[in-house]
Length: 319
Image 1 (tube, rainbow, N blue to C red):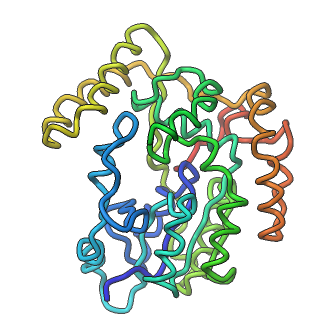
Image 2: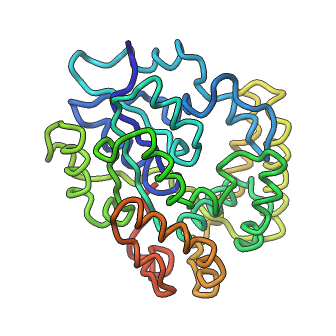
């Protein structure tokens, strides 16, 4: 059967795209060109409702088993097959589905400071013109309302960072030795060592891939009156675009994004005030993660955590 031997299963905005781009260059590994097939996120067709752009994204899900297996048809004999869908960790239903179909698969999780991850998530959607709320903290406060309305998981800036509960649940389905926990900072700051850890975990030759490409970094834009108008048009397209063919959506969206991104600004930094406001919402989950994994994440509990956003910008993000 053409099924994966390993899965990059979490988390969004923590370097999964960059890791995928790095691993496709390893001759002993095969990852399909379709990143984030999202196969294990549902037992059948994905939902047909959600926030701006969600319906179009749902249509990209590879949810039929035959289509999913076909993604791996091009794998040469003897290589390990894998895919990257960073929402698998968050979606607890996917844990049982993965266990049932690929019980021997190895899972790779990249964990990032949850406050930093939340801001990067919001900035990504804001830069895409889809996030209607220009204030990060207010957007976080709207999370429960958006969840009730059926907006997709990518809008759950806080919940996606509740790693403790998610990893605890995952360990009920997969033993600890089948799960590799990486830190985002290691992938960014010491990529060679991080990639060698991944290679050793998967059982392939280390030292083959020596860098992590910068990938999937969405431009950030200023909240000007003109940009607000463009973003409104993009959100409108995100809500009604599923009624039109993909080529029509691209023809309309591409020039709007080009206009939105022509005056890019520096990506926002997590301020001390923002961290002070959000950190209490993650404390119990961070402590639970430490208990479940036996690893320390004490640096995430500090208001002076040296995140990429809170520094001078000398270290680029990888996604």
